[in-house]
Length: 57
Image (tube, rainbow, N blue to C red; front, top):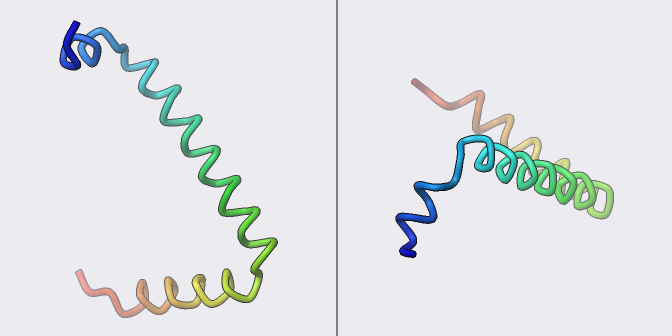
């Protein structure tokens, strides 16, 4: 079985489930990082806010 066959057999539900699991883990990791390094997290939030404010479409 090739990689293409394995990908073709994977259903959309399986993909969604895997993606949901990944995003949950990512959000949990971000939350832990924000608790451990609140000052760094605040600085990152500020940088993101400034970037979004100055971003032009």
